[in-house]
Image 1: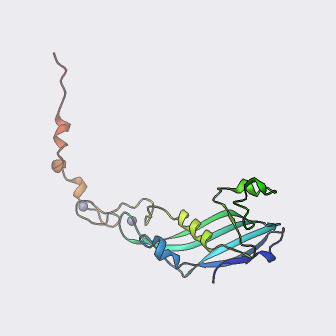
Image 2 (image 1 turned 45 degrees about the horizontal axis):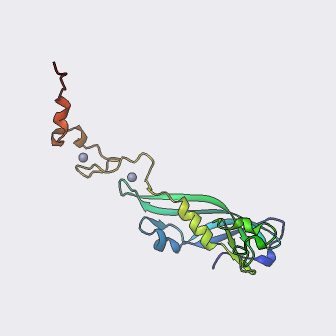
Image 3 (image 1 turned 45 degrees about the vertical axis):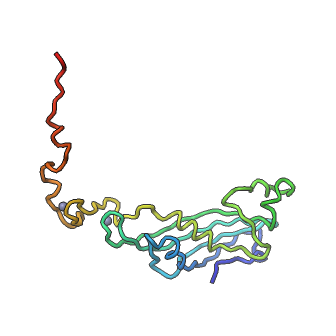
Amino acid sequence: MPLTLPIAELTTLATTRQGVVATTWCEERVGDVFRAVSPVQDVTITASRAAEVIEVHANVSGRFGFDCSRCAEPGELTVDTEFDHHFVGPGQLDAGDAIEGGAADFDADPDVSEHDGVRIDLDELCIEHTILALPVVPLCHEDCRGLCPTCGCNKNREACLCAAQPERASPWASLQDLKLEPKA
Ligand SMILES: [Zn+2]
Ligand SMILES: [Zn+2]
C-alpha cells in the first residue's frame, strides 16, 4: 500500500501520522550491498497545507543487513533519517515568475516538487532519503580489522603472525638500509 496523503485532509494546522513503506525497493536499488531486514520501514509524517503549498517533514527509519566491507561477516544497521519537502500545485514549478506566492522560488530545488491536486505520494521520497542515509562502506563495527591480506584470516577473531614476518617480500625493504652520503 503506497504511502499517500489526500490533499483535502491537510490544513494549515500541522498534523502527524504514522505509516510504512515497503522495503521491496531494497533488492533492486541497493541489493548489491544491502538487504531489507523487515518487509516494511517505519515513517512518521508531519504535514500542513497553505492554499496549494504543502509542507512535509518526515522521519524514516529501517533496519538493513549487509556483509561487512572489510571482513565480509554479516552485520545489521539502523537507518534513522529525516527530511523536509515542499509540494506546490500542478504546473507551478514550470510557471516561473508568472505565479504569485513564491512558488517560482522553488524552481530547480530538489526538495520541492508538484502534487497532482489530489494527493501527495511519499514512498519515493522516503526511499531516496533512506538510500542517501545508507553508508557507502558498511562495516560490522567501526574498527573492524578486516581480513589478513596474506593468509585471509579474520583479524577480528584470530591473531595471525603474517604482519610480524620480516619484510623480505617487499622490493623496497632494502632501501631502508641505503644511506645517501654527501659528496666530498
Ligand atoms: Zn567487519
Ligand atoms: Zn595473516
